Image (cartoon, rainbow, N blue to C red; front, top):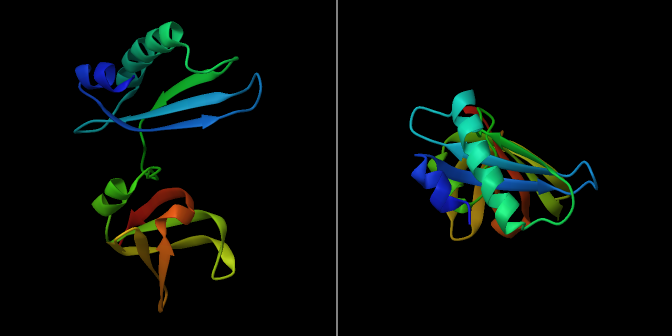
Length: 141
């Protein structure tokens, strides 16, 4: 429901995070555009998004809307976004243990089918995408 309005403003919807915490719940909307997002872009989009959410009311209860750029350590929400950053360092947090751990940080080598190939030191890990709870960009190699 937000994509048409965000696109009309000249932005791309990078992703959405919802953190339910009662009255302190947070809805974070990440936007991007060529050349990056600045504070004026966030304010402009926030007014538009807030109006849509007020009318559509998709979330019951109170929450805070936060509109943001994905930033330098951007959250990566899907495989297409991960593919854009092959060769970069990423941090992954998994939903369950894989190779006796839930956190991985290393170079994103490849994506094969629905699996992430990550290089950590001299080791190569092939991690099923379905296990990834959160992925963040770390830095360029």
